[in-house]
View 1: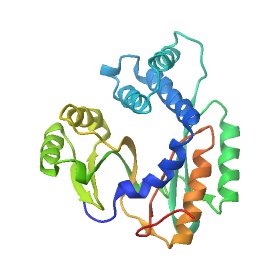
View 2: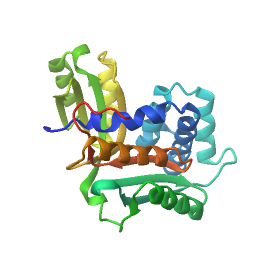
View 3: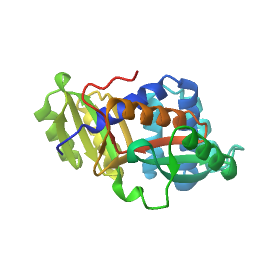
Length: 246
């Protein structure tokens, strides 16, 4: 892979989200519950559940919370029935957004997403008009000066990674979603500690904006991610070099 770092394109909005620990836990619990409902409570036979549990552990979520979410998913405990809804939108400068949600109230979520987009200079787009520009991939990021690139490259490819690249002092490992857990676990067993690891929508190409425009888009993304029903927001924004939020 060449070009702009995927990690640097997402780290700014991640920093804002990571500061809201309670909301992060709530969103992960929803994902675990839905994954267990759809694929069963055995993480070894349910890749989506394994991925959600890995994310929960990376956020230091207590095991009791994880187990309770699984039990809700498989019907052993009472819990909400969540719908998975995805919205496509355009932000300032023609930046594409994919907004993934889990909700028990479709009307409320649609109204909230529309309101946030409208206030932030964005608008909903027709189904398919944005999503064709993205692919769902696993992204694992490492600090380049802390790891041996050649060794990491060897372990990652042997475990099934699609691509490994070094850019902007970051090493990025890209995988198919189905291979994400195996690759991540293989790298962890080899002693590599990641900065970030998640399955998300990555753009095939990016939209470049100046610092002012980029700040507007990131502000909108942060407001969307602050919505209780929004699980994640993917964008094809390319940040200016050395960008810092105002």
